[in-house]
Length: 154
Image (cartoon, rainbow, N blue to C red; front, side, top):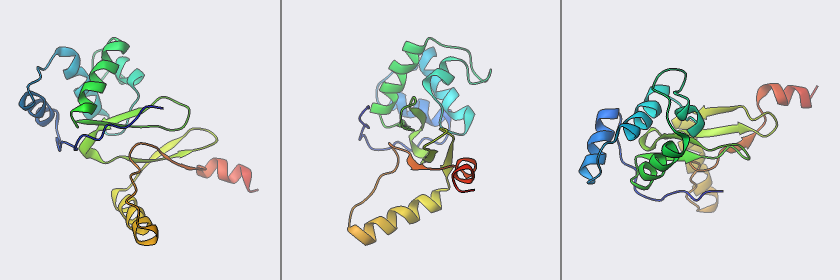
């Protein structure tokens, strides 16, 4: 399992803002980095590096997978991108400021993004109860999706 980068989150709500933040930190905007950023912002939900390399359904040009991973690593180290793990599958990547907290089915692998208010309420409940400040951003919360739960409990 990869370790989450703990760089402060850079609030960049658009590709243009992310490009500005990248340049402000002294890095150039290569065409490969632009494609990765455009892919992350075009989808509106967390995606795999493989989906980015494949062009996310024609939204961006296809890329070299190794290049996508290298750029995701750089962008994550800068605080522009975060990733989440859904168990044994590939990591999912999203713009860091988007706060995509994910719940994933332990059986079939389906996943859903939690509403921000629900994730915040869960964090507050954990802190009130045990004093810890939970971060759900690196690992998905395990659960059973509605279909798998129905098949388990007839």
